[in-house]
Image (cartoon, rainbow, N blue to C red):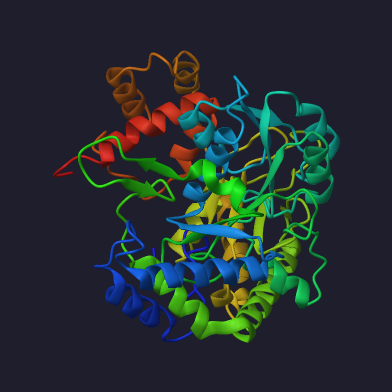
Length: 463
C-alpha cells in the first residue's frame, strides 16, 4: 500500500510536508554507521539523545528531574517500563501489572517475556475508557505497575489518568502512561482548544510515559522515547555485564548495538519542524479527524465507537433492525471494497463490548482528502449491502471449534487453509473478507495460534 498521500490509514504517518522525509533520511544516512552502544565513542549520538529526550519531556510536563531513553519503538518503550518496574520491586515474589482491557498488546508481551502477571481490568462497555474504581480494586501487594492509555489504540480515547494515578500512588505503585500514539499530538490539540484530559507528568502519581516520534512527530521509523519522572526509576532497565573477557557491556535499552540513523533522523526532523510546525500539523490532523468523524456519522448504517479524544477513529455497523441486531452488510467486505478503491482501513475483531469495526489512523496528509474518502466509503457500504453477508460454512465453523490452540498441528492448519480455500503457500487472496470472517469465528487464543502458523508460511526463504 502507498505510504504517502493519506490513503493508508494504518501503520504509516504522513505529514504531507514536502521534503520532510528526505531531510530525515539524509540525517539517517549520515549517522547510520555510528553505533549507539558506546556513547563515549560517539558523543554526537549522546548529545542528540539528550536533546530528543529533553524535547519530549518539555512537551509532556517534565521537570528538571525527568530523564529518558530513546528506543526502537513503542513496544520496546513499553517493555522497558514493565522491566524497570519489576526490577524496582525485587522484593515482590510474584509481580503483576494492572492493565485496562484496552491497553496495547505490548504490555502483554512484556508480561510474557519478563515473568510478570498481567491483570486485565474490564473497561466501560460504552466509552471504552478504563474504570478507575475497578483499576484501584485490582491493585494489591503484588502490583508493581499500573498502566493507562493516552489514547488507547483501538478506540482513540484517553483513560482517566488522574484518578488511576492517584490510586496507584496511594498504594506506592508506579504508574505508566502509554502515550505512544498520542503523546506528540495531544498537547498540541489541547493548545488548539480540544478538551484533552490531563495525562502527562503534570498529573501527580505518573511515573513514566512512552511517546513514539515515528508517529505524530513524523520522524522516520523507528524512534520512541521512554520518560521517567526521576533517574532512580529508570535504573531497572539498564544492564551491565563485566564478568566475561570482552568489553564491559552497558545497555540503556534492550538493544545493544544500534544504528545512530533513527536517532539522528528524529533530531533533525524535530528541529526542522519546530513547535509552530507541529501546531500546524496538529491543526490539519484535527480538522481531518473531525470531518471524517462527522461524515462517517452521515453514512446510513455506520457509527463511530466511543467519543475519541485524539486522531484515531473506529467505526462499526448499526443493526439493521431489532430482528437480527446485526448490520445488513459485512464490515470486512467494506474493507475489501475500500482497498479496491485504493484505501487501506484496518479491520479490528470483536472483543468483549467492542464489536467488529474498522480503524482509521488519521494524519495531516488526510486534510483535503476527506470528501474523496467519504464518497468511496459510502460506495463501499452500498457494495457490501449488495454483496450480502459473508458466510462461513457450518462444517468449517465446527472444525474451528474442535481445534485446540495448544495442540494445533501443521496438518490441522493445512486442513483449515484448504477448507478456507487458501493454497497454503503464504499467498493471500485478493478479497480478505472470507478469511477475516473465518478468523472472527475462532476464539482469540486459537486466532493467535493460527496466525502464527501463517507467519511461518510467509517467512520462508524462497517464498
